[in-house]
Amino acid sequence: MPPARLRTVYRTVLPEPVRRRIRHQLYHRPRRLTLHLPVPPDRSARPRRVEMTAPRGMLVPRMLDEAGLAGYEPETLAVYLAAVDLAPAGTVLDIGANVGVYGLLARALSDRDVHAFEPVPELAQVAIATGVTNRLTYGVSRLAVGREPGEATFYLSDSSDSSNSLNPTFRQSTRSLTVTVTTLDEYVETHGLVPAVVKIDAETGEPDVLAGGHETLRTHRPWLLLEVLPGRTEKAVAAEMEPWGYTWYRCVGEPPYAASTDLAVNDGTAAPMWLMLPEPATDEFWNRALQWLAALRATAEVKAR
View 1: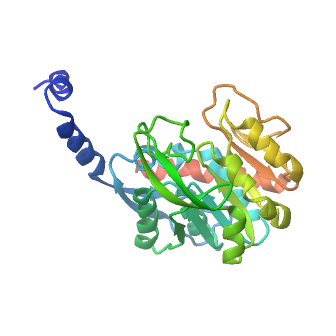
View 2: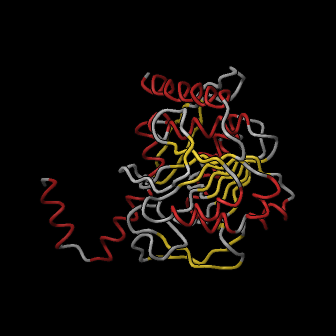
């Protein structure tokens, strides 16, 4: 039967419960992929690849399978890895981990303690299993991070498993789950951590994460990498960050980046990440980011072999 005819039958003949079962089965078919890791600039002995198994319908594993790390936010990853290399001693926190790419890279390519947060059980399980399979275990908490501790409804996006949020108006959602919410300050104090690098990708929840981390920002001054969604969170993120005297860099294009005082930049770039540092970035930092970028791009050649 031609594909167009199959689609017509699927939409007009099959009842919705049957279509739902088909979608579920297609989503959960396993995808097994090899993720080639960049060679560190110092040429230290680190893992060269990571094996991952995830449901075929998950967005991030599909992107990694198709393009590898060289095609998955390489400039942002380069800046992040430079921060992991050069920030003061302390822990890496990955807030909004999805299947754990950022936390996994910090664990594989550094000696830092790593803690990741992902409240969706299926996504968290991929992150946990990937760490165990590759002997790169690190802490993955099935917690949301927000403004205050407690319980909250977490909305599962109908369009993408990378767009789940505590914000009910962020994406259309017909499914949700109840999650435990911690704050950055509570988690840091409870676990006795000294945060060095904090990555925040909370799908419009970034201002709340920052609001729940005032003591952490005041006391520990971690290096931050966070998403700022154009037209949604610029003002709120700016209001949370202005008291702390950080320097802001918009991670779009190849580093180095110019410092900025305005988060409201909408040039069509989807969900840009921002680097926020307690002191201005040095030449050493930008050089290290460029070295990591070259190493990430080189993984495309390895993948192609």
